[in-house]
Length: 312
Length: 270
Ligand SMILES: Nc1ncnc2c1ncn2[C@@H]1O[C@H](COP(=O)(O)OP(=O)(O)OP(=O)(O)O)[C@@H](O)[C@H]1O
Ligand SMILES: [Mg+2]
Image (cartoon, rainbow over all chains, first blue to last red; front, side):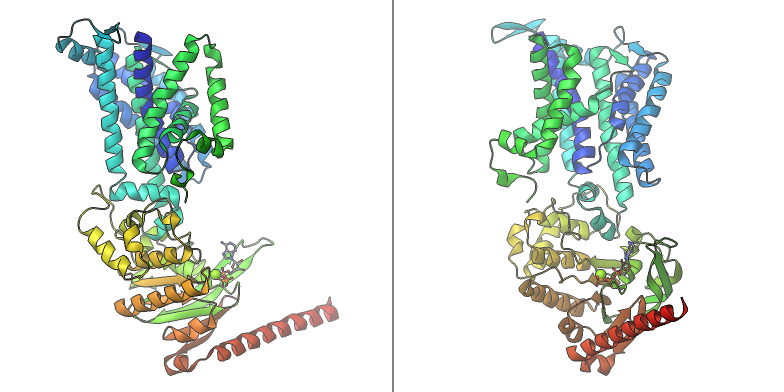
């Protein structure tokens, strides 16, 4: 049971990553490699600050800002210096590797003995007065784990709702239009370059947030933890689209969250059944490859009518 | 309103693909004037409109719109003065966004886009009323994605978007060329109505001689990056399609003559 709870919690945390990837990859059709570096950046910044005695909320907020800054740099490389988008992300990702090591001072920061958001959530759980465990489907479930799960879920839902509201503002609508038709958005008086830069900042802010929360949940930050994360996020987005569809913005956002959680659960089950963890990235990449080369596959996987597809 | 002074633009300068698209264009357009631009393929019509809209910077010369020297303004900045409709119906709208969202974007052309809801306030009622004037029944489909509409419907909406906030300069580049005859007729009528209603200063490129003689109060003809003809007033009103076709034919003959003369010289001296 604990295993399932942990898979769910990590899935929910990583749905912030999926939301970030959704913004860069789906809204701006920008394959943003920066994400691999900003997951670690978020983890590194928050861990370094927390072990130096900073409040976890403050540390997490600063991590988000650091991620947004990294995304903005990628955007500037691409839009101002006209560097290919993929390469812009790779440059920043590579630079971040060194930067992350500097921030951490070593390749791994354990946070076992310091208070993080997990500690807070645990205290909230204790304050409910439910005791150590509750019974669920006849099995004992640790209240502490349940509290962490609930707090994470509520937080992520709040973030998603805020994102949805943002994308319905004038600025957010202009951002979505930029990915759709940059020529048109220029003709309507917005700089498509600035929109892309702002969008990548937003995306990487979310990715850094995922990194910061993941580090606190796992109890350590590691300089390697970002590797493969972009493809991971992409897989979540694709599963979400297959599950919930792409017709509305709200569906896309909800899909990314469900996709992330479901994907994490599937992985937990597969590992449980004896899948070699070393093969995980290979299988994830294979899955995304299949989904990308056969868009029809997604439609067939979906139980809805194809007329609801995003393209008309 | 528009003052174009001796602008030049050469694409791919110094390469085998060098094209001198604009070769010293001078054009002054009075406020409220509706100028039709014609010319053969590749004569520089789109390039001229693009130069005004800021799709690129001109190599030489100066462009003033409404008293502002916009020569070095980027495209998105000029958008505060300029409304545009493109030839391709796909260029003017964001296909995945709804009609309402596209219109909301247009309602902020050249303004700051903040964190207020895009579809808030009285905008929706205004959209219903305005879209109804198109007579296309689109007012009941405001929440449908624009990508689901026909080319003619999209061009009509793009026209609404370009003129939602009264532009100082309206640029139309063969905006009916990609449409079937019926839709083209519909869109050109809407165009004329909006331009007349708001007294918009307009430049409209067209390949239709019928449109060229029917609409506008001035007509300029481009050839090889230069203005070779400029009709206005009574002269413009008297123009018939045959006159324009005859003028095209004249230009074509002169070109042939140029080519054969060059060939003659080449044979004799090279
Ligand atoms: N971005 C560009 N790069 C290179 N050449 C260009 C570019 N834009 C226009 N040209 C060239 O400039 C010349 C004028 O093109 P333009 O599109 O202005 O013609 P046009 O009068 O609009 O023709 P049409 O009636 O076919 O639309 C053409 O030879 C074209 O190939
Ligand atoms: Mg043209």
